Amino acid sequence: MCNTPHHLDCWNENGGCTVFGCENAPSDDPKIAVSVGEVGGSTIISGKQPASYLVHRNGQQFGPYTMQQLQGYSAEGSISPRDLVWGQGMAEWLPLSHFLVGIQPPPLPSRLPATMNYPREIPNGGNGNSIFFYVPLDRLVAMSLLTFGIYERYWIYKNWKFLKERDRLGIQPFWRAIFAVFFIRTLLKTIKEDQETNRICPARFNAGGLATAWITLSLIGYFLGRSNETAVSLLGTVIALPTVVLLLPVQKYINSVNESVSPKPQFNAWSTGHIVCIILGVITWLLIIVGLNA
Image 1 (spheres, rainbow, N blue to C red):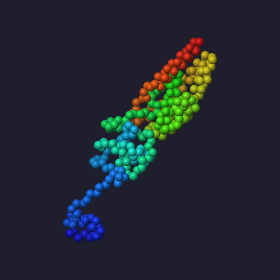
Image 2: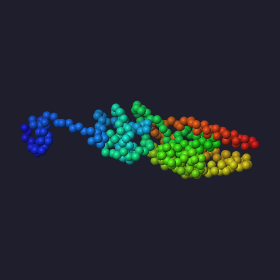
Image 3: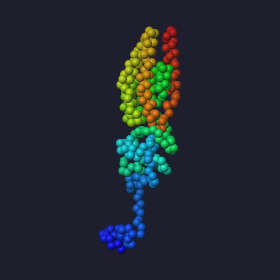
Image 4: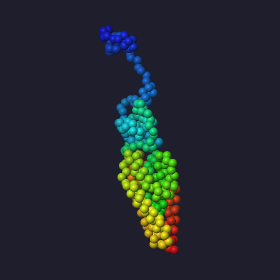
């Protein structure tokens, strides 16, 4: 015996002396079984902890992030404990809740802040959905000129459609494109002030100035184009065509956002909407040419 004093309750609870090496110490301490639910949903991964983690949501990959970043995003509600997390050396994707104890899932946002250059060896590659209407600048200019500005209405429609689907808005993108002079200011302001895209890349274009100039040129071109005098009508056509230039700063911003996320999405593909715009544009140009030759 080591003659170490003990409380009777302690002696009985531990089954003997608690001093290492004492002949009255228990031969082996019993192991405590703890379930995942008892520790608040946390899981301890054996071995070295990954230096960075990737997040999987709705078929897309985001990251890499450190665990400290993930904890911060979870605290501010930008990421949900239900989202799957994977790090180098992990055998499978696990919910973030397995790494965070006692955090309740916040409302789910539609997208995450993203950084570039995540490891390419991760499983389950994302589907690369674009943010807003992602098209090359030269396509926007060429299609707008070819379609006599009809493609600009299509551009407005696609961006409103993106906002409707992402934010579940009760709006009609088609009519907002048709009556664009009433809604383009709101659209450009919404794109500039969008919180999710500004986390990725801050917007610096002048939404109010671009919208005002676009509305002014569009209205002047419209009213002059309705004139019975050929010269005046032609002047209206010339004035209305450059309106696409006013959308370029916005499209440049949208493109920079999409080029900054991982994985980088593909440009929006040529679609039926493009074909319809081209057909209507060709018809419009033919009518203008016929009118000039009449």
